[in-house]
Image 1: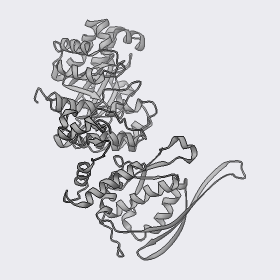
Image 2 (image 1 turned 90 degrees about the vertical axis):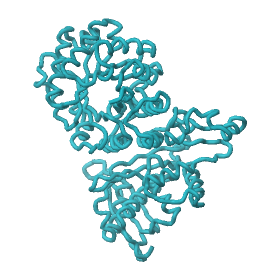
Image 3 (image 1 turned 180 degrees about the vertical axis):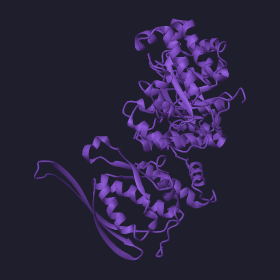
Image 4 (image 1 turned 90 degrees about the horizontal axis):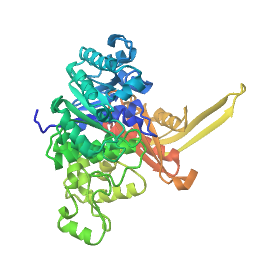
Amino acid sequence: MSDKRVTLYDSTLRDGAQTQGIDFSPADKELIAHELDAIGIDYIEGGWPGANATDDAFFANPPELKRARLTAFGMTRRAGRSADNDPSLTAVLSSPAKTICIFGKTWDFQAEIALGVDLEENIKMIADTIEHACTKSDDVMFDAEHFFDGYKANKDYAVNCLKAAYDAGAHWVVLCDTNGGTLPDEIERIVTEITQHIPGSNLGIHCHDDTGNAVANSLAAVRAGARQIQGTLNGLGERCGNANLVTLIPTLQLKMGYETGLTDDDLTRLTHLSRMLDERLNRQPNRSAPYVGESAFAHKGGVHASAVEKNPATYEHIEPEKIGNRRHIVVSDQSGRSNILARFREAGIDIDPKDKRVAKLVETVKEQEFNGYAYDGAEASFELLARRALGAVPDYFHCTSFKVLDERRWNENGDLVTSSEATVKLDVQGESHMAVAEGNGPVNALDAAIRKVLSGIYPQLEDLRLVDYKVRILTPGAGTRAVTRVMIESADKNGEHWSTVGVSANIIDASYNALRDSIIYKLHRDGAVDSHS
């Protein structure tokens, strides 16, 4: 491996889950893992097996990764137990993950106070755990928690902890700035010193962002010789977050000349990946985010806009297309065509870039996004929008009306009962149909009623299932009259997942729009035929 190669370790699915207000579902974790794998991340940390029900569900049915190595996270054996007789460690080592990441204390204060063990016992715990883990996996890492504080407090002890892990077989020894208080000059000096004990090719860096320096600290560590960076998408994490891989990756490749697992084509998906994650988590994307923010290449009217049109490098440090973003001239809004064409290619749609329908679709997308639609997290809805603009989607069914009734009451036993009933009227292949169904909530009832009609006509829908449903308030100032955006994730028996979006001031109407797109996308993808189209 080239000395310019930097290994990328993503901990979004665990560190990111510690972000205030974020609660990943197993479906969230699976989708994010697939996106990370597709873009070329080397390691994807799935979570801590045995720690909670979500991580257990994720590792019980792990995603099939093509480029990345799935990693399980855990801690050193507990004091007074052997490594092969520690239930927590056994759960981690028994997972299907190919790589194991074990964290342990390297700060003498933490070992004595937090763990309540003497310093020699802590070193034994590290060595025993890593040695045992190496019998289960050929790729074991040691996450040196609170390393930089430990190094500044007791240099010899902190180094001895690292050596214990490395000598026991750890492939990577990762230096953690756990409380995010170390500055770039300190990081570079200390990592340089550590390379005298552990080869840089086996050193990683894991920085938190409590001083706003996590990205700078990670880059300083790379300059000093470390060749693995740990971080999260969009810098998610507890307190102020972790080093932001979305910022680090293009900086490493486009600014510093380092190599990662991402190709030039992979880089063009960074903006989509960043915004997809935010939409998935019902978070407002950071417009000012470096590289990928909506305003990262935005130029307001006047001198700047004029200068950019003549020479983009005047105010743009890179070409926005390299990371999948776009130039945005605020006054004229002449942008978006290249993004639309890139999305066409991803969807397998072949069209002449000069086709007049492309320009029309660009304007349609802008209008839809102004109205609240977000297609970065709903690729299936975007593909349908594009194909409809090209006249390539059959009219599989038409909903002439639907009605949903919700009831909340107490039964004769005094128990609270809620129920939902939906009635739909559909025109399908020239015939009118009506169906009524009950469900666990209005959306489930509406879905059940639509399926009652369509499943007998289109057998392709038999394995369609809804795996996630999210609502986002777009106009919070309007209170209960707010416009809502609904995103639905669907899947089939082949493990294919797709997301659709609907927007309306009526949450049931928004849900129907997303549900309709999900069904139509499945039918079109599976080649269903509408004899009346």
